[in-house]
Length: 386
Image 1 (cartoon, rainbow, N blue to C red):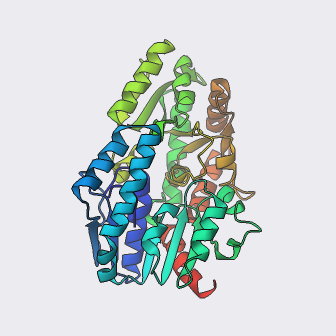
Image 2 (image 1 turned 180 degrees about the horizontal axis):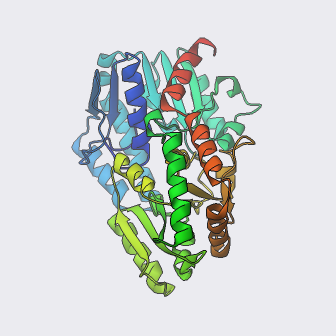
Image 3 (image 1 turned 135 degrees about the vertical axis):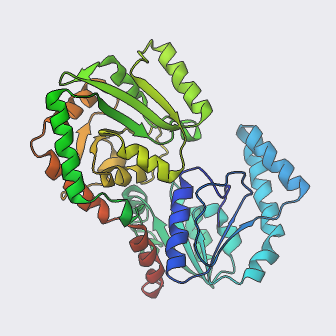
């Protein structure tokens, strides 16, 4: 049960679609209830799956449009009223569905789950612990599993009344998207040969949204690389892939403002998830910068997807990424906001005599996080929680 459009090109579409596929494979019938969407790509083709739109009245549609078109208090109030209207309008639909489990990713949507027997609540962003505790304690007839997706979010529950309901639930990948080790080693060897022979430019890039929800994903670090013509005397080709048209225009404005050299830079629009993975596989070096937002508490899915490609992965050393890795595996790090550090880290990576080993260790690490393991763990958690 979503508080946004479905289908969607937004990041939550990947999580939603992957969970749908797992639940269907496990033999469950799945309904996704969301706002009407004009986006039609990336819809899972699986058994026992249906998309339902919330019932809306004219006044509800007016409030939704007002919420999307304005900012500040007016938008917030319109959105608040809109969802209360939808809660009333869709009670009968939920009653007819007679759901065994309601799976949601926004605490605000708990209002739709008051009579549910079982609830899985994913936690993707910061929250008010007291408010959430009151909501869940009030659900006396429901069994609830809380699924924080990052270590930072999980820690907020420590020592609280809700701690025993939590199951750490980071994002996942599909096993078939993990490159074969032998192929990864061969690819790394070919890269090293081409670097030594200076046979072609080094392809460095980022794949993902540029400015989701108004904040930068840190792509300025990669744009700064345009000041560096080469790495180890090998010319570099820089690409940013995944922006909306408005996001691409913001990047072009940044380039003009800082008089950056665009001759070696390629800007590419949003791609469906499967094609976005292919875009990462076509790079030599994948850069994972840090979101420029103090409100970001999520788990960077692109981190796992990048490791699964078997490419060189260079990561901004910040809390959100340090929470992902452990003593078993550490990526090539760089200092966020420091172009020289990013340049040096890429240089160190492609000079590393143990590069092939590092890449295969990254493949093994990514395999630990699969959507099926995540879904199965959450479904089984009801047996051990009270």
